[in-house]
Image 1 (cartoon, rainbow over the protein chains, first blue to last red):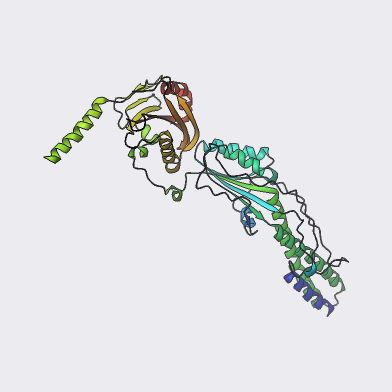
Image 2: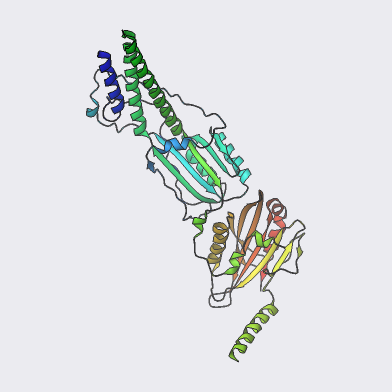
Length: 283
Length: 161
């Protein structure tokens, strides 16, 4: 019956671990110093300020967007993968206070995911797309996807600001949006849950060796399988968060301004409407 | 009778305006030929490849919009409404000493880059007669590049009367 009790406690620990139920310990993760904040979004290279620009600097959002940021378009080039092994935590380690007594660690560096969406006016689009792709590669980044008038590149976080500044100089800026997601809490939580799950798995493996009956062995194996799946999922998520933090995503779209942004007062000078190449070149 | 007189006055005004002709002079750039039929332009010239340079003038006596006003109005029209990329904005001075502002716009049409130069001159003093002159030049970006010098010379030779 001891193994049943252990199974139950293992399930309880996994279900309730994280911020409350698990023993908390600082788990180091391989993270570089947080990069400088994104660029100040004033001016467009011509000295204008565009009212429709939506720059939200250092906007800390919930980490739920991180998943979306990684999806969407297929990777053309393989991304370099940082060392992902998180430090396991031994809950039996002597000297660890219970979770509820552990003070929050404020000294830890935040794990931030930077991303930007930039919109440029339509001019020499193919040439500009080539330039952006090269710009990313020159900064140890890589191309994620490219279409007729859009491109997604990823650059090391430390080159995020410089890359944005360089791209904004390429053309007339229609809009820009820079976001920062703080995933420190999610990362820490995952680390603790992973360490606990690994610890429980070790105990289950020990139990499996001692199992006397077939049904006992099968029950432990089922739990081991479930736990292993969960561990792999958590490892995958940790890896994804690290990769997203290490490489910032920059989306650039060449397009006309959306019709929603055209709602402005029409001046009573009809000749203004006849400005443009369409009229000029109609011979 | 009043109606008739009013119509007559309008017709006279239109006729006198037409009779006066444009209040500027400009020479067609090298390799351009002047087109006779140019409405709504007051002057228009083209190359065999379809590069065009044109001039329009407008009364500004009522509005007295200054250079800043008209530049912003044109910029808004082209950037916000028509999707042009504003590539450059520079102050220029013609050979006759007239100050103006030139904006260089870009736009891809059918996957081909096009360039559009708009040069603006505003003459007249506050409360006096004032006119706005808009000099436009544009076409395929590569062809504009080839004729850039000739176009610039023509614009620098522009004179308002």
